[in-house]
Image (cartoon, rainbow, N blue to C red):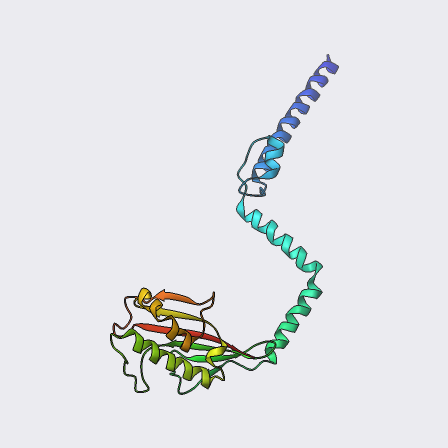
Length: 220
């Protein structure tokens, strides 16, 4: 009789322990962070056979840890490259604002290149003379000529010429009319290049100004 009671007691204890372990496992699994790849937890998918939403922050954490490992493996090489780049900057002259006859606003800047030469970035030029008066009101040809003269003056002040222009950005009121002056544009802004663009001038611009040109020149 005693042995039978002990057996039943052991069985009850085993069942209670099993239920407790199962419950704790379920709680622990629900609380553990779920990896997210493309929004789903791959571990849950392969264990449960159904898609389960993962946690995006775990996906980012995994991604960051991966790249951190790549950095650690090649850290010496990356540091050498960074030091070389900083040294190149330290030895390079600071960008300079090109002075008169270029207007102060928008400025024309001269930037030293890493190997040799400079970028001369001509700020947007409009059809104004040295006194600030608009030239050629209502006349696109005259305004292109005045803009071309202003661009040429800035290039010369920065040590460049029209032949050094790599590309231009032209803001115009009437793009179709602007296309008719291809020869005039080539004279002042160089031959057309794939990087050159023509953009419609915003309505808020001065109604008397029909064209504005930015030029990017590279000197040897």
